[in-house]
Amino acid sequence: MGKTIAIVNQKGGVGKTTSCVNLAAALTAQGSKILVCDFDPQGNATSGFGLDKTRSPSIYDVVLGGAPMSRAIVSTKWADVVPSNKALSGATVELISLDRREFRLKDAIEEIKERYDFIFIDCPPSLELLTLDGLCAADTLLVPVQCEYYALEGLSDLLYTVRLAKQRLNPALEMEGVVLTMYDGRTNLSLQVAEEVKRHFPGKVYSAVIPRNVRLSEAPSHGVPVSVYDPLSRGAESYEALAREFLRKNPIPVEK
Image (tube, rainbow, N blue to C red):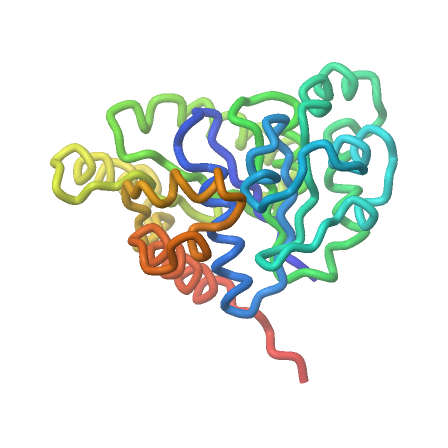
C-alpha cells in the first residue's frame, strides 16, 4: 500500500509545488508509481503537469461532491495527477458543516492507495482546514524550506499545527524530511540558513539541496517537469539526486 506524503509550508514561494512536481517526475523516472494530489486552489501542480485546470472531476468534486478518487485521476507521462482549480478556494467554508471534515481527503485516498508506491499531496500555502485535511491524510510530511532570511519564520506555527494534528487527529503522522530550496552555496546566508535548519531538524534534512535555477522557474510555463524542459540543468540534476536519496530512505519492496 502506498505511502502518503503531504508537502507543506504555509509560507508561499518556497518551492513547494516545484518540489512536488519535480520530485514526483524524478521518482517516476526511477521506476516508482506516483500519484500527485493537487490540494491547492491555485492549481499550480495541475498546470505544472500540463493539465487543464477546468477539467472535471477535480479534487473539489472528490472531497465535497463525493466523486470517486479513481474518476478524478489523470495519467501523464510523469505521474498520475488529481487536478485542482479555483473551485477549491471556497472549500474551507463548505467543509465546516460536513461530517468527518478533517478526513475527507484521507477517506478518498483510501480507495486508490494500494495502486501507488507514493502519493504526494501538494497542500495550500496556509494553515487552514485544507492543510489540516492534508495532514490527516498523510503518513509523513515533507517541508521545503527556502534558504533566505525569513526561512525559519513561521516554521514554529507550522510545527504547532502539526503537533495538534498528531495529538488529536493523526497520531501516526511523522516528519519525512526537510528539503532546502533556492540554495546558493556562494553566499554566507544560504550556508547559515542551512545550518540553522539542520539544528532545528537533526537527521531530517536531505543532503540533496535545490539550487536557485532559472530552468526550474521556466518549466511550469511549458507544462512539463524540469527533467523534460532541460534535463541537463542544475535543477533537474538536483531533483534526480533528491529522488535517489528519497528512495534510499523509502525502499520499495520487491514483489516476489
